[in-house]
Image (cartoon, rainbow over all chains, first blue to last red; front, side, top):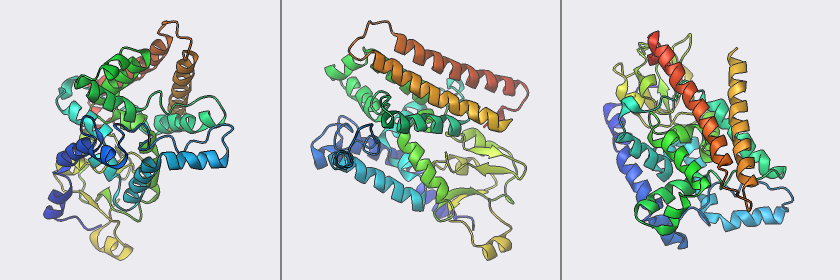
Length: 292
Length: 69
């Protein structure tokens, strides 16, 4: 892959904070602009729910299953849009617009880094897909559902709403489910190094998005490392909020199951070995020396 | 070895999810304020925190934390 130009590097990533703030304005209380304009709801619970419609529950008929898709029509459109964007451009929803991950990351920025919890030594992919397997299988065999109990799309907006003095949301965090969710938000979000441990370990939408990101790596734009320009300094790996950069015998590589195109690695790389773009064709690759 | 380690973490993720879900369901409609669900989730999170911080410190001591990912 040809290295991106400086203008291209500036074009996508430095404005990420503005995109995150836009995501908060569109989806997070007290504004929830997009949700209120389209459905009149005030949260992701309802037509905007992106996490339940694809769950098959024991005893559900096909018509009831499809009715669930109709009931969550905005959530269905949202997830389909996320998947489409991810296929061609990488996980831009997760890195740039997701109000839940964005709120946790922005909250983490005011938390001292030296006190933050380094989750990098726990491999995220097996934990995430172990959790996700139970998320899918448990309702299908009638064990129950994880969809609402530990839903960050419900809990994080509740934290914000509670911050604005909503009595119902304040009471929620005095119950055990609220305490657990608050602990998860703090320990896996605001106190976690990079602020993205919840996204990395538990988010089901992120799990689906990661799979799409991985299987379409050859077709779409992704963050990639030029192995010949890389000096193996490891700076990219230390700043990666999802711990998706690792070192193997060849050099550093990016795990596209976890990578969000946040651009932090690109900013940290002194060798300019990291770029965001499509894979290079074979002739171009041989001319340039190769890109991982 | 890495394969077994990853399998262990998959088990951790799935058993944590299943356990938390079942603990939460047991309390539906019959909450005795035992905070068992909080304790169960707390144990899992504490273990994860211990693993994360302990391993990071251990690698830091050997100068490997920069490559700990």
